[in-house]
Amino acid sequence: MNTAAIRSNRRKLLILAALALICAAGYLLVNTDPANARLFAYSMKIRAPKLAAMAVTAVSIGGASIVFQSVINNTIVTPCLLGMNALYTLIHTAVVFFLGSASVVATNANLAFGVDVVLMGIAATVLYSWIFRMTRHNVLYVLLVGTVLTSFFGSIQTTLTRVMDPNEYDSLLSTLVASFSNINSEILLFAVLLLAGVAFALRRELALLDVLTLGKDQAINLGVDYDRCIRRLLLGVALCIAVATAMVGPISFLGLIIANLSRQLLRTYRHTQLIAGSALFGMAVLVGGQLIVEHVYSYAVPVSVFITVGGGLYFLYLLLARKKV
Amino acid sequence: MNIQGLTKRYQGRTVVDGVSFSIPKGKVTSLIGPNGAGKSTVMSMISRLIAQDEGLVELDGTHIGHWKSRELARRLAILTQSNNIQMKLTVRELVAFGRFPYSGSRITAEDAEIIDRAIAYMELEEFQDRFLDELSGGQRQRALIAMVIAQDTEYILLDEPTNNLDIYHATNLMKTVRRLCDELGKTVILVLHEINYAAFYSDYICAFKDGGIAKFGPVHEVITKENLSAIYGVEFEVQTVKGRPLSIYY
Image (cartoon, rainbow over all chains, first blue to last red; front, top):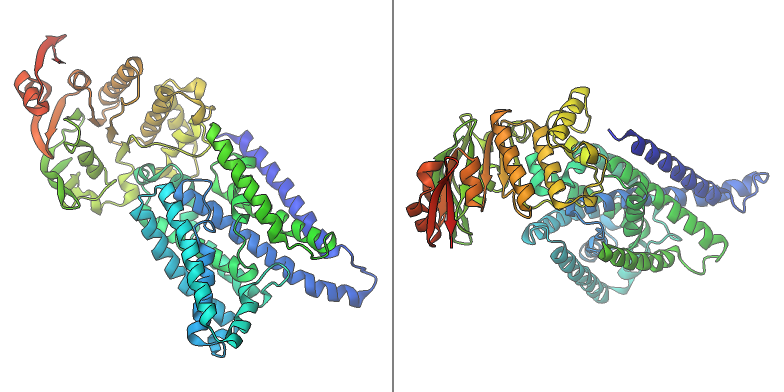
């Protein structure tokens, strides 16, 4: 096959990986003094879990966005734009609302996350595969329904928090507004295991992604069990979004940026490369951004603000650039 | 291929009603008829792209619903009109997808040979490293046909393949269809709007009207003045040119 293109893409991915590594090393080591062992250990204790959480987020959002785009066959749609993280926030709130913040489910972070993930997996798979079927994969309708759903979930969630006991709300808030400065690192191990499990369970479907991008008819023609494959991939996407939202809270434009940067850079249909590129871009953007936020702006501006502003502009650019073609 | 009592309803409206016929092996069969007569729906059902509400489609004695999807993909290939491929894909990469039912994403040396042959068959050698979105409609259509050839199936189903092609490319495509049947022994089933292409390049014609079969048989039996006038509801003249019935409508 086109070996030259594959090799040049490998080189690009290596450079990206190096960039992500430099960002990671910078994040860990800037403003530390390895000579002072105790202080150094203290910084590591704070920085290492954050770095790990950012890596997990980059992989889950990067992977989920590419997969989702290929499933719907459109590159300007991401799971977050269609309200998947709003759905997760709603589920998380509803669990605390109905079970109370003192229940075992709410006090044990891992158990709470487990319950959220199961509910999210079921709700999102049923809901989104239904939307896809009802709109016959028409991207415009899907986007419209998704946008409405985003505010719908948001409204229910706000209503729940309004009628909630203030004490309950207080305990909910600390997990609800997870951000890069307040990372939910208790569930880190669980999240990593979950991601690995998803990738393993979906290894066959992931191999089919290349074919799925030829469109539904072609995929069926080439022997793909289409509906089942889409359902399973959607489940995987929902779980990835659940992981990312639980760890660092909703960041809507990150997926759009990194998935499209990866597609623009690599210009290929090979999903192993696209997903790797997207995850590495995610690492670079998140870790590099956080590095700047912490040391240049000394926490004055959260990294999600940069991502939202940059992402918004990039989204406009993508829309306008596509129109010309 | 045996089709029995095929029926499809959309929201209570029956669009295909109890269609039964047998598609002769190793021949070119064209499905013709007015818009909304159900020919494309029948095509989609016999290629398992949409599910039928009633009836059977048997391929080598087994209902297509009982075939393993991947096994079936080695026996039957379909090319529909809806091919908006969003990916950055070169012609050769597209044709290589035809080998997916056999080798997955790993292309073997044998696959590469078959891909080469398919590309040569459609005379696409000079375009093989070009991206699909840089090609003209006719070239893209040829690339898709090359992919179907690489899929190397006994049955080839083409849904309105001459749509959006000019006379030169459409005629060449029909000649290719003929060659696929005569040289490679394929069974080709087409949905066509152009009655004369159907009459000149097929062996059998199946004419649809109102969700059912109006006439089915060898070209000469179906393409007659009376039949066509009854099916399309306009006046027809049929003349014989080069031993084939040429129809003129006005």
